[in-house]
Length: 278
Ligand SMILES: [Zn+2]
Ligand SMILES: [Zn+2]
Image 1: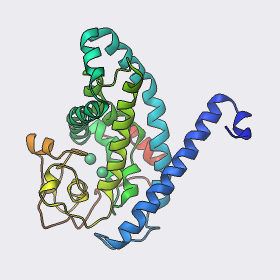
Image 2 (image 1 turned 60 degrees about the horizontal axis):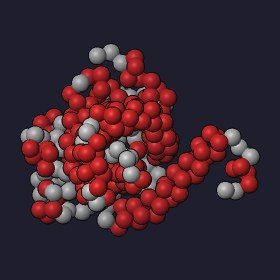
Image 3 (image 1 turned 90 degrees about the horizontal axis):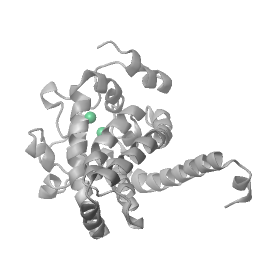
């Protein structure tokens, strides 16, 4: 560890390492998506478009705060699972290959995420938090980060709960702790991809794995009949099963965002759900 980090308290050093790690991720994401979004742009867009600084602030907030808020509930959940599920079952689940556990976790996690996300649209209290994510009027990879920390915490708990309840994340062997980390990592990277401003169609594959077109329809403000579709983050099959799929093969949304006015400042946006009239 560098000398200057050793002089800090362990908590401050850990926080600084986390911020530096986020900077590295931001550089990697920028190097990957900015050229692709210029070469294969779905809609004409500038790199420094309206709201880019707001989204950069959200990038750090929505990475750091939910991780802190989730640490205790997830530890309690792990403890409960280890005590409530039969030991023989836990040993069997943890004996499955890591890839199998990750794929199973992604599949069951998508059901939890689907419903968490759908409730965020259907329950007025939750919509107050989720509206921030839908306020984006232009789509690109960075819009993935525009979200209230409470919104992220809620949908992430919904997404992780099935995996924990099935014992797929219980760390009774060293590598098992990797499962939730890999699931969140894969989901986050895919989140940047599906928000990106890319003119990319994947044919029948789009019904198996979420594409930018699939998620862009979730953000459309073209017509109220198209609202509240495509809740899944990775697997459109759950939208087909629960009757919310909208994926025309030859069209893209023209307008994004919501008609609800939101405060301009990030602080105002973060506070708004707590004082919003319903
Ligand atoms: Zn949504
Ligand atoms: Zn989105």
